[in-house]
Amino acid sequence: MKKGLKVFLTAAIVLSAVACSTTSDEETKNKDTKEKVVETKEDTSVPKEYRNALHKAENYSKMMHMSKQRIYDQLTSEYGEKFTAEEAQYAIDNLDE
Image 1 (cartoon, rainbow, N blue to C red):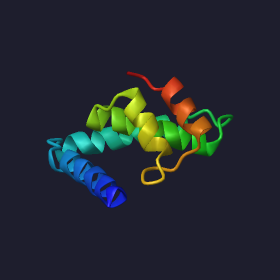
Image 2: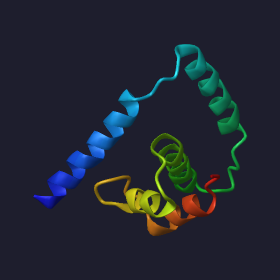
Image 3: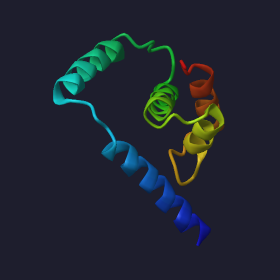
């Protein structure tokens, strides 16, 4: 029962964050363009899963204003992102606030 409730609450939070977005189409296009430029300049010496964990952490931080502890918990949760503890810690250590 608790597992189902946790999944439901996480989904509800994500959906409400998406629904509350007030970004215009033009702002979205500009943001997508900027993100593509950043993605091409990423440090490829860092393993892909570590970079993916950092990207997810940045999204949680910006979109949902979650604390580092809550982001870490979400990244490592079996009901969340399922990153390893090392990948999640890398993301937290490299998260720009």
